Amino acid sequence: MSSPDKIVHVIGAGPAGLMAAERLAQAGAAVVVHEAMPSAARKFLMAGRGGLNLTHSEPLEAFTGRYGAAAGMVAGWLERFSPTHLIGWAEGLGQPVFTGSSGRVFPRAMKASPLLRAWLGRLAALGVEVRTRSRWTGRRDGGWVFGTPDGERVERPDAVVLALGGASWPRLGSDGGWRAWLEAEGVAVEPFRPSNVGFDVAWSTVFAERFAGQPLKPVALTFGDTTVRGEAMVTAYGLEGGAVYALSAALREAIEREGSATLTVDLRPDLSIEALAGRLTKSRGKDSVSNWLRKAAGLSPVGVGLLREIPGALPEGADKLARRIKAVRLTLTGVQGLARAISSAGGVRLDAVDDRLMLKALPGVFVAGEMLDWEAPTGGYLLQASMASGVVAAEGVLDWLAQRATTTS
Image 1 (cartoon, rainbow, N blue to C red):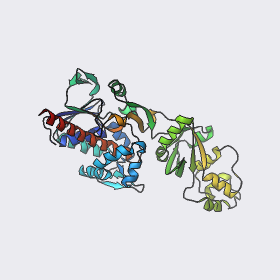
Image 2 (cartoon, helix red, strand yellow):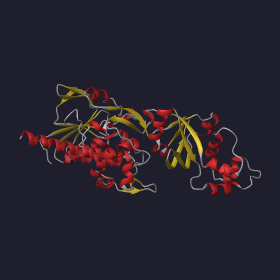
Image 3 (cartoon, rainbow, N blue to C red):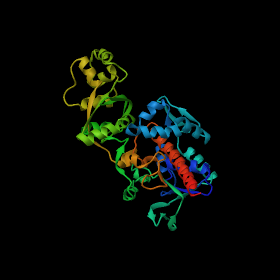
Image 4 (tube, rainbow, N blue to C red):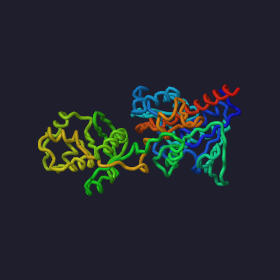
C-alpha cells in the first residue's frame, strides 16, 4: 500500500523504531522519527561493541521456543521477518555476515557502527526525518507533545509507532518512563523485571578477590530440567555470562517466589563421571591438591576455587570427587537490577495489542520492540524479535490507514 499523503511518527530510534520507519517509508508514507538522546540507536551500538550478534542460525521451531510464554505471538512476527530476512537485509546494506561455531550470526565487520551508518543513510535516502533531542512528553488536545532544544513542539500525525524500549540500561535512553502515561490511558502494563542479568552468590572474600573477572569455561549449567552449555563469568557479586542469561528468566522467577535458587555447575561437561573418575585415580604424588586437580581433572584455578567454595572437605574417592566436579551446587540469593540487565521483561501486555501491534485502547497507536512484554536469551534472539516487531507494527499502520481511507471514502 502506498500512503504518500499520510504522516507517521515513530517515537524511539532503536532497532525496532528504525525498522518500522524503513518499512513505512518504503510504502510511501512520510515518516518522522523522534529520539530523545543526542544520537540514534545508542543501545544498539553498545550491544555491538563486543561483536554485533544479529540473529541465530538454529531451526525456526527451536528459535521460536526461545521466547517462552510469548512464543505464540513472536512466531507470527518471525513469519513476517525471519532470520533469513534479517540476513538479507543486512547484506543489502553492504554488511555481509558469517555464522560462528555457536550458530550465532554476526556481520563480518563485527561492530554495529558500520551497519548503523549504512542504515541511517538508507533512511535518509527514503526521506525519513530523524529528529534527535526530541523527547516525547505526552499528549495534549489530540496532539503529541515533544520537548526539543527549540522549545515545545506539538505534532498531529495520522498514526504513531511507539518504540521506546524497555527499562534496562536506562543511561542509554530506555528508562521505561512511558509506562505511567500508557497506564493512565487504560493500557495494561506489566512491571519491569531484569532479564539477561547476573545473579548474587555469597562468595567468600578470598574467592571473590582472587577470581572476580575470570571466566568459567566450558561449563554446563543446570536449573530444573534445563541444561545450558557455554561460559559463565565470576564477578564480585556473583555470576553472569551467556550460559547464565539463558536460564535467567527461570532463575529470576524462582528467586522471586522462593527467595533463592540452586544452580548446578558441571565443570567438565565434556567428560562423563566414569571418565573423570578414571583420571582422578592417578596418584597425587607431591602435587598440591590444586595442582593435582589441574593436571588430573583439567580444572582451571577458578574451577578449583569454586570446588573449595562448597562447605566441608573435598569428597574422598575418585567417584565421589568426580560427581562433585560434575555437579557443584551454587545458591543464588538475588538478582541484579535493571541498570545492569541486558534486557528487561515486562512492559505492554501482549493482550493489550491486536495482531497488528496496535494498542486496543488507543486506535492508531502501535507498539514495537522491548516495550512489549516478551523476553529471550542473548544469542541474536533479542535483536531479531525487536526488528521483526518493527516490521509487523509498520505493516499494521499501513493496514489501519488503508482501512480508514476505505471507510471515509
